[in-house]
Image 1 (cartoon, rainbow, N blue to C red):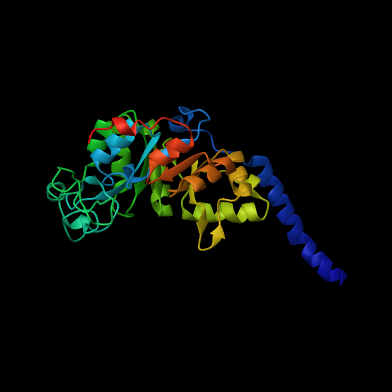
Image 2 (tube, rainbow, N blue to C red; image 1 turned 180 degrees about the vertical axis):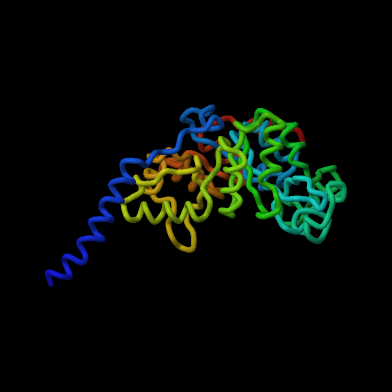
Length: 303
């Protein structure tokens, strides 16, 4: 028995030393310029420009969301066949446009010839008010040029095709490195982007989220030194409560801006803001602005 105790004592002592060293060297994330500009106010982030209100990921949606008074525009990036950064969510075209097939199979010119408002309907398909209205898939450069001052959340949708370097170059060319948060569901894309574009704010990738959840569950969240500045998470995943009060507190203590997605109903919005969420990513940014008591100006928007 004594021999077993001695056998266990050494690894436990090493673990204790390691944890102590981590506790002494861990550092919270520093607040990036894109978030510092907002101070302490809760943020409303228009998911794909507010896809519940207008055709998603379009200049029309981004303009109207900006006019509405949202804090940030969220958007998705893919590559055209001729290597242009295009703002579109799906791998294929059929859900949102009058085209078919993979986005990556068409050139910028071919993609922009499609009707990106063709499928949008607010009444379950009884009417399609944006068909034939000139709504098209924008290039990322067009978005940067049209909205230079608007803060943006950008998701890299495809790994291993060089998007990270192109994204960094575009932000540099348009002097908007401090106006964005970059995220991805691919950890390797985020790591590569951080290496190629140091200083630009990023969100946690899937592996980082899992690590934070595990450390928080063990009561060791204070050991984390994040390489990212935002935590973009759902409230729940596969029946597991991710955005618990303890999780939000741990994340904020580590300097992270907690942004929950995709929150569309006002009772949930109120509850999550009360819980401590610092931002909500929503298809209906008008609802979130109303919950916060902020004017939406929606009645003044052009038809």
